[in-house]
Image (cartoon, rainbow, N blue to C red):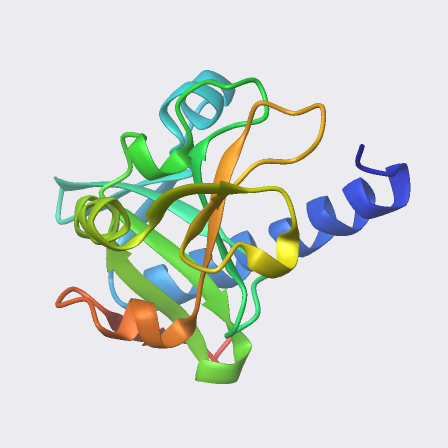
Length: 165
């Protein structure tokens, strides 16, 4: 069970990542519009992006990652579709160590995970790298990737933080 202090910390760091993302995307000339609560929860889209009036798709912003511990969600805590199979076009991982957001195509990431992550289910976090991990009394199915896994994707790129604000 997540503690109230951990939830508060996760929400705060997630909000910081979203603010960084908005600044980063707008500095690239993208228009960024916040998704509705329903789109966020059901479609796993935090923002919709467009350029010159042309919709470019949704993005799911992921904060609070470490280069050697990037959590990927097949199923959420209710056992419903996780963000890996949401409607976002891209996933933006906030990675201060890389100086910005590591951007990957969600469908390519899903294909990578389907091919690479073992169907073996583990119950210890320490064993979750490239294996399906589920937590006690939860219905989620998640795995750990590492930054070098993201870097192996053809769509991988870094959007540097906007330092002019």
